[in-house]
Image (cartoon, rainbow over all chains, first blue to last red; front, side, top):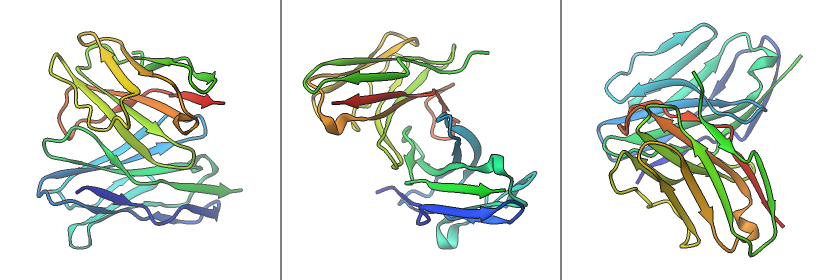
Length: 114
Length: 115
């Protein structure tokens, strides 16, 4: 069975701090895809990144970076030098090869205080 | 180009009434998905359409829920005899094909409140 766990329900930090959002997943498939989405207060989900199970290279995009470790079934997301505009709910999601649906974690509400 | 659109943005209804929620996917996207997001929760998969194939209805929570899609265009999610536990945001997404790795583009959602 597929499952995604985001153990951190809420995180609050002061602007310019670094923050890491944890994501742990469960799957029996060897081929799968991991995603992060951002849901700002407006409500519309915004795609951030996709990773396939065969690519464990870390990814950096500006202030955002992702650490994928198959050994611990984790796909963590770090925001460096956080900004108030980063405040949102962040979702980690999983899809298995041949399965079209996304399985989402419960989300982490991130608040960046000025 | 235009993104995924949904209507209405908000719907308030009385318990026992039927409601219809509409989704317009991105033009040319063959795959369409419906998800439900309860307050403070993650998204739950409801149903998936891919072209003219039979839809994957495995996520529909009860037979009060149904959805239709004509070809590769608009989809309608219908909830009959609404219950208070149906209150949630209903999100629609589309993707260029139904493969597992394709990014899904989400609409703004319809917030349903059942009184």
